[in-house]
Length: 257
Ligand SMILES: [Fe+2]
Image 1 (tube, rainbow, N blue to C red):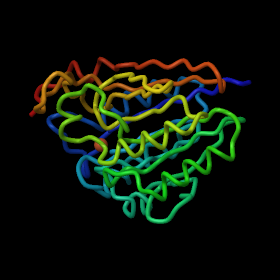
Image 2 (image 1 turned 90 degrees about the vertical axis):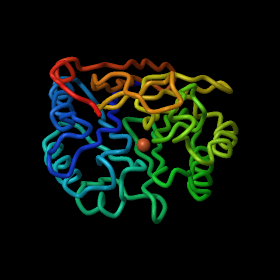
Image 3 (image 1 turned 120 degrees about the horizontal axis):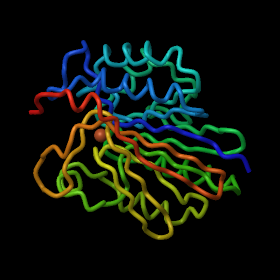
Image 4 (image 1 turned 45 degrees about the horizontal axis):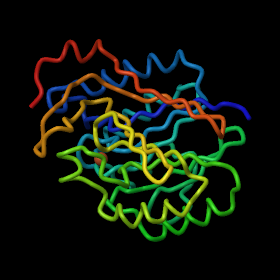
């Protein structure tokens, strides 16, 4: 089986007009990573939600699409809780239509491998998506990679687990538990790097390209501001994944509030 090579960028939180977000030049941070990724041999680039700074700002999506227009490999956009699907549809090039109305969930094949993408922009995974996930996986005998913005488990991350966890995570995990051909689940949302294993499945949290949140406190505090991203290599059986951090922009930041 062929290896596929995917880059996952998450929680880029681009501002409407280029202004800093929490004192950080989030556009420059993303561009610094894209410059690295353009030199990589990729099959796919995934933005796993929270593309907009706060509330689906149109200028964020317009700017992002402009940056991605000449990107050399297919680019897929997912919905996070800071995104607004209607605005995304207006400004981003959604190459794959949603399998369901009112959300953006879809399947994408890279070489012979199937990848599924869910929409938890409402802080819930809808029953319709749970049903679609179960039925799609049942129709496919090979292993499948799953991407979902919110981790469907508590992950030992104080503030995010306590304040911002997926609302129906127990129901979602119960559904995932019954799907044997999903073994690897890629998330964002938590602004940290973490791997959690349960029931024979591995859940990987990918850090933000904006800033990382401390996992040690039940109140919000910034861990560090190095923009991170994840590389995924998979042949349907063996998975290699690691996180990179880009140091240069973070070293020039002056304030985070
Ligand atoms: Fe989020």
